[in-house]
Length: 341
Image (cartoon, rainbow, N blue to C red):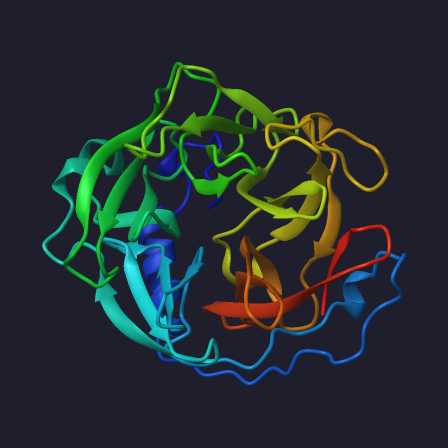
């Protein structure tokens, strides 16, 4: 979610921007076939060579999607929307509306949203036999923000119990408490990454017994000197933790410039480096997906391992400004770097 330093009044409100884009795309259907050929293992592909999203149908109007696979094998998706929007799919191809996490509203968030019901950039995970939903409450251009936690036994609309604030930021802080992502490391420790613009992306340890912060330590994991970086996703594969982020701007329809970047580290808290050895705390990041053709501003990615392949899910903008779901397979080259196919 692009939340820069400009005041909200300098452009249309985020609620209006996202509301219009999601409404326009809510029942859109697309069948953009993903490429079947694999790029050269060692080379970074150019933007023109990036594959289109794989085929998805049904209710695919989303912004900031996050996936979890249920024990039944079905998929639950949450994304930015009024009271956190939900979707379901049985096959990761056809999607349907599943209501909202909080159909009766989430009044505990309005201190941060200015009264808006629009809640941002959730992250879903299934741990300890229940569903965890970390989600953001803020307003466009502000870092008076909070990440909240809710839990549910089923993940269904109306079954979520709010557990309160996990991380918050004030205007006096140099970070923005939005865009959460939870990862469990090889030792079973829980870590929440988050952040947007300002001094960059952060990480805190989470107590698995509560889902809240374990201590007051905050790690810096990526930054661009105040530039446009947000939406961290940490994914473990082999010997490395991979940090996927979005550079540049979302929320401008077909003019959006979001692109997906990656770095990796041997420790979950970093330091993370890109393919050229540039530290992500110093602006580093290797591009793996950017706008091409009618796929504009792909970003706010989610990465997860499925039974058939590792998956990259994201939103992108169609030429008419609709915000739509993109899904691709992730491949891995001989040096252990991801590419989209």
